[in-house]
Image (cartoon, rainbow, N blue to C red; front, side):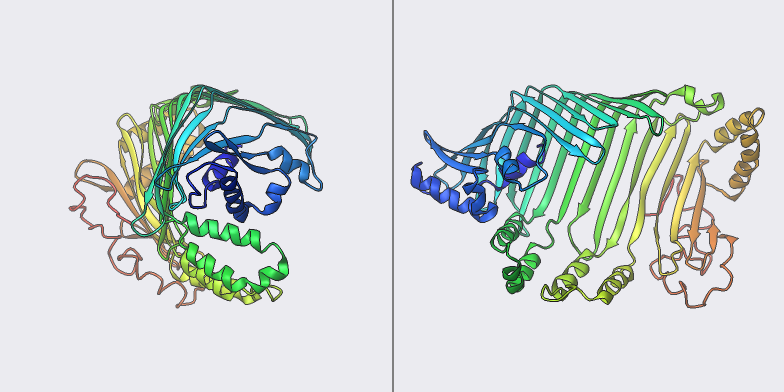
Length: 526
C-alpha cells in the first residue's frame, strides 16, 4: 500500500482542469480523462469512481473491488476501505488535493509454503497538495500521520513494524531540459522493526530487532519524464488487444523514444539516528547511519553511486577475540558505484530493432551484438574515496576497475593506511595464542615491505592490474603476465588507464618518489 497510494495520487489528475464549477458534467469529464490511463473497465467494475461532494470531486480507489474482479487466485481474506482523494479545481488550472489516508487493512492468501497474511493500520493520516496538470506533478504538498503498525506473517517468518508520528513534504518544478525536477522528504519517529525467522527444517531460529528514534528519507530528481510515461500507460490501456498492439507498434516505438532518458538523475538518502540492531549475538549500533544511492537516467555515459556512512559504530565484542577489539572500526565512509554505463545506445537500438510481428521480436544474434556494444564503452566499477577509522588507525581506498573481453580486471586501486604499525602490533600479540594469526603476521610484515611511506607517515600501495594477468604494486612487478596469452588479448584495452597498465614505470599518476602526495592519502581521482 505504501507504493500503491502514491502512484494513484501521482496519476489521478492527468487531464487539464475541467470547468471551474464542480458539477456532474465535470465529474464525467474527469472520469473520461482518468479512463484513458486506467481503462473504462476500472469504472465499470467500481474500482475507480468520481463523484461530486460539495465543492469538490471525490476520486475513490477501491482495491477490494479490483480483487473481487480477478478471475482466479483470489485471497482467502481481504479487507480494505476505499482510498479517496478530494480535489477542487483552482482558477489557475491546477487542483487543490486533500486526503485522509488513515487506514486499517488486512489480507490473507495461500502462498507456496502455506497461508500468508498482512495487517496494516495508519492512524491520523492526512495530506494536502497542489497538483499542476501541465507538469503532471505536485508542485507542493505536505502530509502527516499519528502512527503506524504493520504485521506480516509467513510460514517461517513474521515481521512486525511500528512507527510514531511522521511528516512528509514534496515539491516539483519544470525542469530546464524537459520533464520535472522534484524534492521529497519524510521523517518518522520511533521506528521499530522486528523480524523473527523460525525454520525447523534448517534449524534456524533468529530474531532481530531494528530500532531508531528517527528515520528520515530525502530524495530529489532532475528531468523526470512523467508525461511521456503517462502516454505509454495510456497506449497500453488503448492497445490491450494483441493484434492492435502489433498494428500500432510504430506509435509504441515513438512513445518509448520520447520517454528517454526517463530521468536525468535521481538521488536518495535514508538516515537513521542512534540506530540499533539487536540479535542473538549481541547489539550492533551507530549514532548516525546514512545509506545513499543515486543513478543517472538512460544515457550514453551514465553513473551509479552508492554510499554507506556510519559514525559511533558499536559491535558486540563477545563475537571477537580479545586482540581484535582494539581494531574494531568506529567510523566508516564507503563510496562505490559504476561509470561509463551506456544504456542509451542499448535502449535505442532495441527500440529500433524489435518487431512484434516476428517471433521472436528480436533476432537471436541481437543480444550478443548489444552486449558487445555495451562492453566497447568500457563500463567500470568505481571505488570512490572510502575510509574505515578506529582511533589512530585509518584505512583509505579508491580506484577504478573494468573487465575487458579477457574477463580479467584492468585498472588501478590505491590503498593507504595510517597507523599500520598498530595493526602489526595487534597481530603480533594475537600470534602468541592464535595459530591463524601466527601465519598472518609474516604476511602483514611482507605487505608493509611493499608499501611506500608518504610524508605524513602513511603507507601507500598503488595496485595496478592489466588484462594480461599481470599485477604491479607501486610500480614493482608482483606477478607477470599469464602464460599462453594471445598478444592481442587485452593489450590494447588500456588506453584509458592513465599509465597504470604496467606498460611503463608509471603507477596511475603516482610519482615513484611520492613527492606529489603531500600526505593527503589516496590520490586517484576516477
